[in-house]
Amino acid sequence: MPISAIASHKGFLDAGQPFRSYSQQLADIVGVTRQTIVAIEKEKYSPSLEAAFKIAAALGQSFDAVFPFDAKTK
Image 1 (cartoon, rainbow, N blue to C red):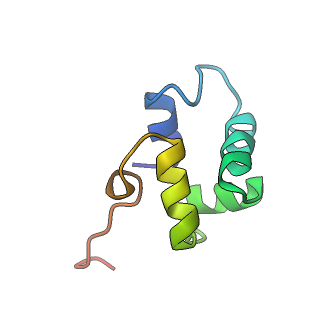
Image 2: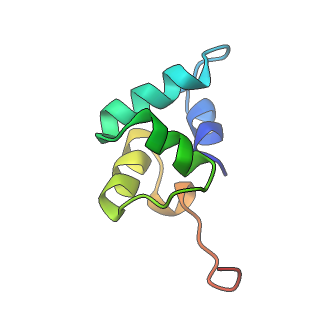
């Protein structure tokens, strides 16, 4: 599930709130740039383990829920 979908479901991303605002809020919490959050969302960049855990914590989700991994397809 994309990070933005989890954020929306958890109330982190309010209805009608622009993605830019949400991604900046998440970036500030995690300590990365907004562009990094956007790249992670688009699966163009793999976050560090620390950043990935911070993203999951900020979204109130388990690491596996935010970053599912299927060894068979990777």
